[in-house]
Image (cartoon, rainbow, N blue to C red; front, top):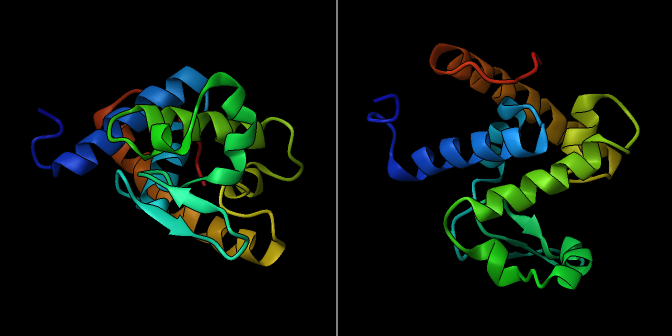
Length: 148
C-alpha cells in the first residue's frame, strides 16, 4: 500500500487533502503544503493577537466561522479529527484563490495572512512544501497539482 510507510496522522493528511482538493478543485499539492505548514492537531486551539483562534489540523481561523455559522458550523466542527476540517479549510482556500488579487501563490498564502510581509514569508515556505508534495504526488497518484 502507498501509505504503509506513513504515520497515521500523515495518512489522514494525505487522504483528506486529496479528497478535499478534488471536491473544491484546488491543487492537491497546495492543500497538502498548507496542511504541512499549519501542522495542527485535532482539538488544538491557538490564540492569535487579534483574539481569534486557529483551530484543529488545518489551523482554521475562527474569524472565518462567522459566515459559516449560518450553516451551523462551529469551532468544534473544525477541531475534530477526520476529513471534515480539511474540507472546510480547502473551501476557505478556494475563497482566496478565486477572487483575491495576485498570483496563485499569493492567493494561497492568504490562507495564512493577507499582511504583505507575513504573506511573503508564508508564500516562500508554501512554494517549497508544494514542490515537495508535487513530487510525492507524481510518484504515487495521477492528480491535479501546480508546479511552484
